[in-house]
Amino acid sequence: MKPFTHHEGVAVPMDALNVDTDQILPARYLRKRKADPDYHLYLFHDLRFDAEGAERPEFILNQPAWRGATVIVGNENFGGGSSREAAAFALDAFGVRCVIAPSFGDIFFSNCLKNGILPVRASNEACARLRKMLHARPGATLSIDLEAQTVTDPEGGVLSFDLDSFARRNLMKGLSPIGLTMEHDPEIAAFEQAYAARAPWAVL
Image (cartoon, rainbow, N blue to C red; front, side, top):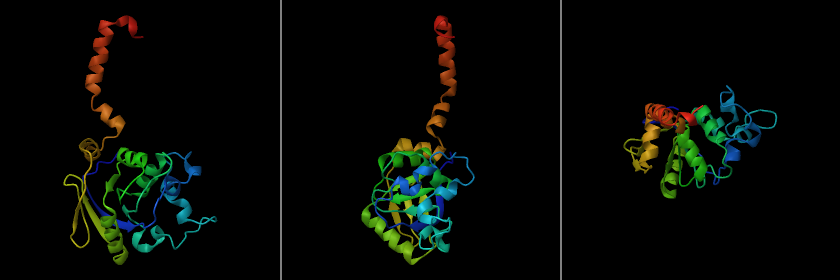
């Protein structure tokens, strides 16, 4: 997965409460392959498009200032609902690198970290202030520094956040759970070789 150290990108304010994983990626797209070149179109599909496939102009990601947003500032319980990892796949396919919200669905939070997306927990007041600022400045960017654990807004204000040191290290190095295991490939190979010598009867 892509390492995350620093990112600056257009930030979109999403005011709705309880944006759940079915809104982020409707269930009928769960059978789609992550490598599908159209995967970015499935993000918020039923909010972005009507039944005929036409864009809904009122949806914020269809508005010119926010079409290329790579940061989302959400509201409480972002990513609640089902445990579908594909919701994180869709955010990644669209290009989202960071979601800032007062609270997240626990599994969604974990799935973001496993897919190179930084979830930032901030207070209700801080998120509301950022969303208000972004509504007032369509197309404004936020700058996120993971090493310093800060978000810098368009007015120069700095918001500090905390992230577990283990998750932060893995995200900065671009290590998924498989990548983390592969870091120990030499030790695993050495163990297997020693075990095969010690107990050849147990190894096929």
